[in-house]
Image 1 (cartoon, one colour):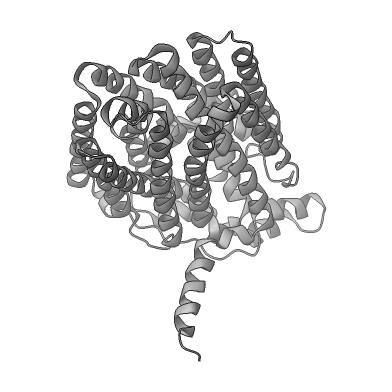
Image 2: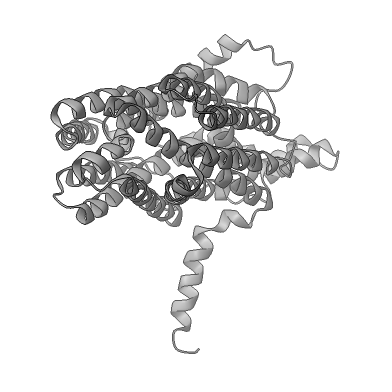
Length: 463
């Protein structure tokens, strides 16, 4: 064997394991659409924050925008989960993402004609939040249908890796384009990207995309209540959901007030905002790829705890950093921990939840985005009153107290172990297509996709 051959094989093995899901055609198309959609979304966040601070000069305006976006997600999200379970997810995403593109087109027109005001930004964010309440659970619930079950955790990790890659590219692209093109024209670029994400939906399978079959007799509100009852009645889901809903209150809002750090703390002007947000995305990407590479690591509880603690400590160091370059390092490290926590939490829930509850459970998980403004708004007001560094440090210290309490009082999290599911020959969507074509029976589809034993999946996790 030539020198270095064994290391090349090992490196190839690591890469093959990390990106295994992308070899599945349906998932590759889904990932391309995911990239276009979240690239546009991240550019949108940057444009909205930049324009809001330019119009008002107040950090609290950023909190109000975050509230406008996230509260609709918090209250409409559970209904979005019911919708994504009841209707074809592929069709749903095509229709709703066209609406997202239209919303941004209206904003572009207001900006280009010189009529934009702050309340327009808040109103557009509210509409976007309503769209996201449907898009997010539908997108997340599609992932397990597109890959064989043994690749589920890897696919979820790669999905979040792609989203974080857009956090690197999106703000940088938006920041670079603002000067030569103007904010309004950059909004038009996001419209094109949202429409591109619509086009990538058409190659995806039409079958296997409805969780609740027609004629089941369920009512919207009873199905909504059933989703909450399922989550709250299962100890493992209950503690995982509590962790997912609580952590954003203390840590995730940090990325929402980066314009304040760029302008008032480090005093480096608008260009530094793109750098800060891109570094946040780099940290998130590294964390998500790390989680994808160790998707077979069984001790998921300690992985979540370690990720949350790293996130909080990293953000404390960022807020206390006296210089810009060290702050970038600590901001990246905080986002590494943040993504390890998010990916692990999401993957454990996705791997255990029955298909018929998947959209509603993911909608409850999505409510973590809705709890974010409950932390963002007071954090931005505290930043106006006492300065952004003090506000961030206090929030992270409270978050650390929550993590310590979880370790001490929750043995179900400390002892949580989840292994990869057994190998399946095809994805659920592929099996559903063969059933629709009359080539196999439903029983054969359940066996070939590994769903025949899915009812016992949750038994592998400690309650």
